[in-house]
Length: 348
Image (tube, rainbow, N blue to C red; front, side, top):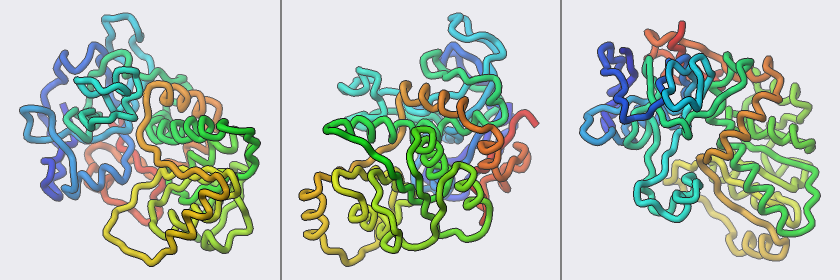
């Protein structure tokens, strides 16, 4: 079968293998026919050789962690042939740590977790893949064209879950949300914020393209000014850029008792002058919280599936700006200036 692979740690080793072996039964009881795979910044970093780990005994890693497929067989009876599913990316470590043992593998404490298409587990960019029933998330059949967005939605579903848990440390009546960054994660974070009934502002530096229209379609407000120039004091900030100056600015922008969730990952290596003492004073005196959030566990994937089922399907479709057949994989994995979400189609 076909599979998109890399040699981990070797830059630009991306290749389409035509004779990839069928997935071994040990990978999971559920056999799935791939429909599509989403592409994100993690894939680009793996292709650049920055990280990635092949399964034990393998030289190459099948990439792809944003999946959508149809069940071909499930001898356990948990799923039925034809069911639309996505595969959960992270699996608990084998020890396991206390969090993994409790099903909170997104909060793994010892770093021994594995991840499809990233770390020691074959990814979903292949014609067929296997997974254990507990790690297959069933989707509403109406999501057949947009269900590949489930993985990034699970990331923001976790972010909102933790925001709400932190918020209930006291009487909490948030009204205004700021999302920085209008990529897939930022737009989906704004979607979940509007589903909660908040007044939502989205900040991005892009002045052209579809982002402003997508934000407006949610009933939110799009901004291209700096954080400091915003005439908004948000109760909640979901920071999705990872840009160091934006990260620091939003910490200072949040309202008293505000919550800042850092969902973007910085590349590091850039130093800026900043008054850390003033930031400390503000955070302490205003009872603000800043926390980081990444990945998701089964509960968050289920919440994400519910959020997608409730969303406007045309709006979700608009997030997918390019669909490419597998044969054009190299083009698909080359970032374009107007991309929001690029999808590699296996069913085309």
